[in-house]
Image 1 (cartoon, rainbow, N blue to C red):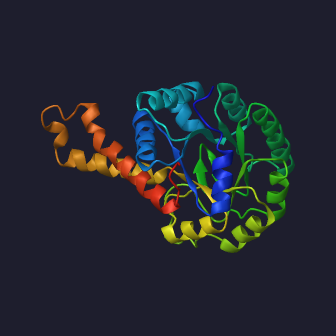
Image 2: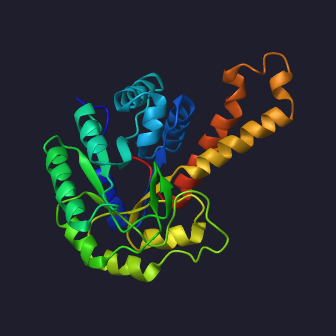
Length: 288
């Protein structure tokens, strides 16, 4: 029996209850432990996701899954954990279904729409046969993710309805959000389009590029139907800042301060603090 849950009940409850659950990208051992620690200390469910690039960096999809599983065991994690592929192409989604992930994202937004529909339907069939949930994408998320560059076009309401009709479990929709740091001239989220999509479908909606969007905008989006918020850059920046502070203070040159377990500890704690703070303003309720 898998230690992971597929998240359907969690995200459907979030959509109904007008709160969100955080989806945090892992990049290595420290990231994994920090995210799990934050979830356990706040007693809230969490989605740990890995991108194709991060999985390649760490080894492969099976290794990432096993790392999360074993850390859950040794850390005595009792809150629900969803193991998710982030922005997977068709081959990656199939590989993660075979590897036993509890949730996968098939990102076909860069394909012709009919092909996106066709491949999403195939992934839904394969995943649902094994009790695995599926996230799809309509409209592009701005910025770059694993070589896929999106201009941030708005999702079509009609296309969102067609993708949702395939039985996907949650849907990422482009509403002016982008990956990575937001430029100074960014105009903000398109709430009118989000409202149109939320009115048209009951599927839990996903906000990608959550790092850097003003908190009040994310909170407004959550009230309108966003149930899953993806966070990565925020943790990367927190980790980098804490590590820089440690080195600039000369801590790495004091005693055995160069030991990676000491060198990486401030950054890891910064991720714990960041994840806990974000969980707080997403409104994620504690596990009963």
